[in-house]
Length: 142
Image 1: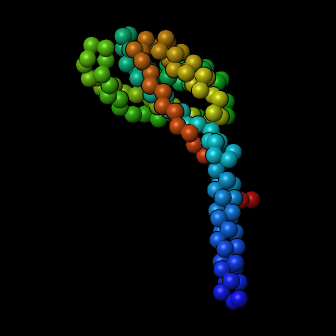
Image 2: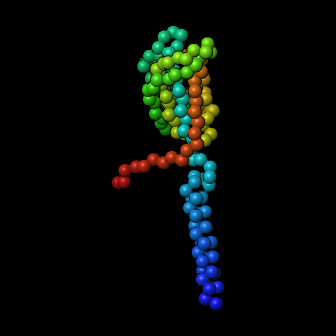
Image 3: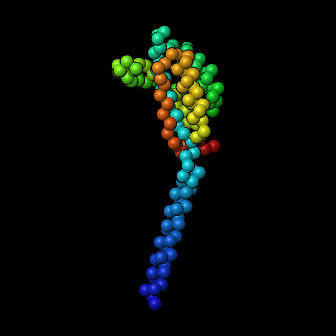
């Protein structure tokens, strides 16, 4: 009789552990397995047929187009890009990367920014990388 009770207790513990694991997984995953947002990286080359895109031109593009599309914020940082052009030559150029964290439905706005940059600065292409993320602001406790 006692062995039967031990098995029932063990089964109940196993079931409770399983249910707890499922609950923790569901609670930990934003929107039950769906990403809470996306991280978009937009790689903008700073060379154009007219010469280097100036800092003033970059700031004007950000102020006019990027801030208007993403007023809640974004990050811009410098890099060096290496890519193969249509002439099959590996090129090196200064690059600005826009890092935008936005809702999952913002992809079209990001692609529009990339197209605007291509047109304004006569780029062969602008790379857009999209990643699903789970993000949160951590604020100072007051």
